[in-house]
Length: 524
Image (cartoon, rainbow, N blue to C red; front, side, top):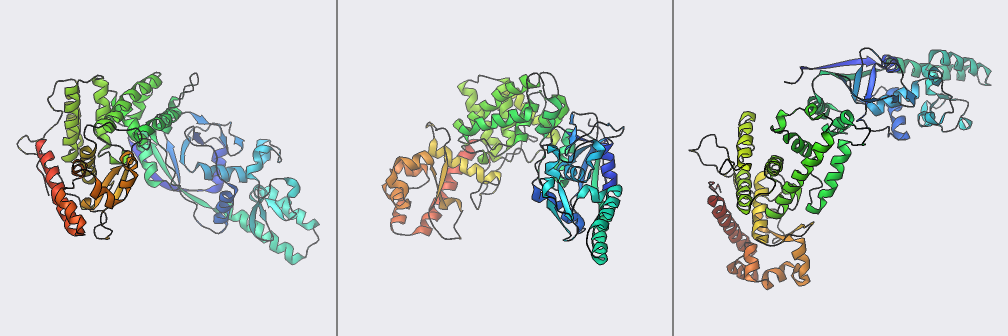
């Protein structure tokens, strides 16, 4: 069971936040990226504060001790608070606020230190605006470092310095008012935050993804990398997953979701992935365990690409199918040709039957166990049915051919199965869509689209044009595209609507024959 989780929204004064940071009450987890904000973003942040605009909510996590970095902004935090929190969202803003508003003297740093240069933000008390000044020699008399305006003692010194300037009393009062106004705004400014207490990594990531204000996601593997970093080998799970995904580009699977990879790794623990806490993966042998999992995942991807013609990760009906098939190759590394055929049948059944959307979590656990038995040769087809007396049935025939929704993907894969059949598929194969009718009403109607493989498309330059392709291709090739001789005649007579109507009827007929052969009721 996961540790009980509590989520509490609240607000904190900026001055209290800065004090707590200096006292080590907030820690930066190592999975946070480095400080990357540009000067324009820093200036915009303070301009928002000056104008009373919100700058977004912060997200903190109170949990057990994880590996952290010492620096916030340009300063190294030596103190360790007794009741600290981890910063999940807001690191760039917190670094900016602390780096710009902290007096370097309190950290015994020289004001011309190179580490401070990115945080050299000044306030012009005449123009009432902010600017970035890289070198002290560029500093103008009326441009004041923001930390001096924020610091009570330094602010008093500013007022004394103004007495030395040759300016009128009215101007001096105006400048003092602007400095004091900003000082008060900074000290009275409130920041909203959400604090998570307890919970595990996965729950923290899910909460972060729902309420983070920056739009920058934190992945579970990034967190796990911070927790499992091996100093001796330099192994970082996050970098490892990135490198592995890049290697899948030959199958056009480089954009596979990182969480799917992590779920495959979790599944290799011998339990269905959603029952494996991310913390369960923390062990000295994580690197070896992960690299072994990559072998099974690659086999699964290659199987999907070469045997089922999923030549783009966007065509994968369910990520769970990849997770299960990866587990199949872990349990059965060298399937026979008969077992390959059975595994392909399992894929088609789970695709056309809405298999992974109709079961509860408890039923998915049973389905996973049945599948593992199937991989070990102890179950005949790997399919779990709640009621053996009721047949699976397909969803309604799709109105449009898209990459969203399982049913349109199933139809495209069926099309590619017809097109490629027993042929050899090339690395990095692609699909090009050719539209028969240009009518907006027809647009993405399945029967209006001819799918051409990029390799096939390039073979015969003359057949690139739709007219040449339909009239000059062999009847065998056209049949693979669900185009009959009768349809060709209609096309030649420019009866395009009749052509598309007949093609839709034929496409449904062929798909229904295939679906019913695998024991599923076809729904038109």
